[in-house]
Amino acid sequence: MQPQNTEQLLTQHFRRPKAIAVTADLSHDSDYFRFGSEAICYEYSADIRAIRETDKVHVASHLHRNGSTVQLPLDPVQSVDNLRFERYVAKATRGHKKLLTKTAFRNMYYLVRPYMPVAIRKQFQKAYLRGWDKIPFPAWPVDRTVENILEQLLVCEMRTRNVKKVPFVWFWPEGAPSCAIVTHDVETSSGVEFCPHLMDLNDSFGIKASFQIVPEERYPVPPSFLENIRKRGFEVNVHDLNHDGHLFSDRAEFLRRAERINGYARQFGAVGFRSAVLYRNLDWYDGLDFSYDMSVPNVAHLDPQRGGCCTILPFFAGKILELPVTTTQDYSLFHILHDYSIRLWKQQISLIQEKHGLISFVIHPDYLIAERARRVYAELLHYLSELRSQGATWIALPSEVAAWWRLRSELNLVNVGGSWRIEGRGSERARIAYAVLANDALTYEIDRASA
Image (cartoon, rainbow, N blue to C red; front, top):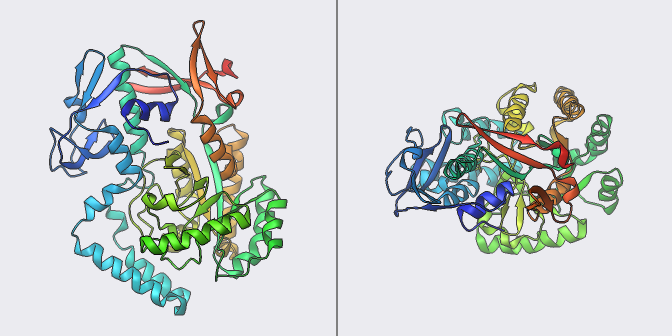
């Protein structure tokens, strides 16, 4: 399902009618540069070389128009893939001794982790993450570069066609302005014991969630435990294999583990996956048999594996749909930032809502046993339920979001007798929207009559 050119990239994102071609004029050099007022790209450029991500070079001044074709000094498809698949990280850190030091540090940490008290582990983590707030890219606390690139491409297309309004299939069902999911990674036997209480807390606000279960070594997983989660309307997913931090250390070992992980997916009746500690390598995901994954952070400044996919919307990584983690994990908030409030979460929610994205949370039962942390989570649930009451977000299970996004990717917008109509399975849940260009700014309008 990966788009092969810019026209397909825009169609896949917006589900809009086919339009003009946008081509690229490329060299073989790759670097960072700025596209539009916000979007920072990492791609081949014929005219721009050796530019740091902090340089304010605007690709708009390098656009060329040739009839119905827009020529860019970059490949937008490659730029978006480099961000979503975090390939810019390898370029940015190539040859850095600091990265090698951190890798050795991380390997040593996982070697001795089982024997370290929690307090000592926290000190190791703080030392590893030192300087996170000085990282210039991706943007903290939410990076929306991919959305900015796609919007700028659509603006280029609209200007070339001399149109002010373009119809497309809205991002979320029934015209919801945004989407939110809550996920729970169960890491210890104490977390397992707390799960029923956590489900009670979630139910008190009418918010269902998914539970990611470690299938080996961490704790027993009796069928009755999984069945109780499902009977209560929650969701079961697979969380790594044994949570030892080495799933992606070696390709051959990954494939051996993936075979066992896929077996547990069938045994658990699970369609979703998340790796331990958000370690990931999307180029290896062909070994996993899941409908969706939730292992890629939007911005990974506070995660052991740095980077970030720079998008707040789901995207396909081969056959698997990625639901990115778009907010700070509870552990990082409480134990790295020492923040027992929802201020940061509310800031991230606001930034995601501005681009109508996916608001996703990773909340661990293990860390909510303490009453102080549990009060913060209850405050978050209350805030989310208020947003839902106001019609500001659609709160769903991850499997529901993945099913919708796959369905939307097959919908088509067609013109019948001068009117636009959405065709395809599930079209009754979709809404027609318009991208409107006014004073060089792009805004969205939902056609409520399309309900």
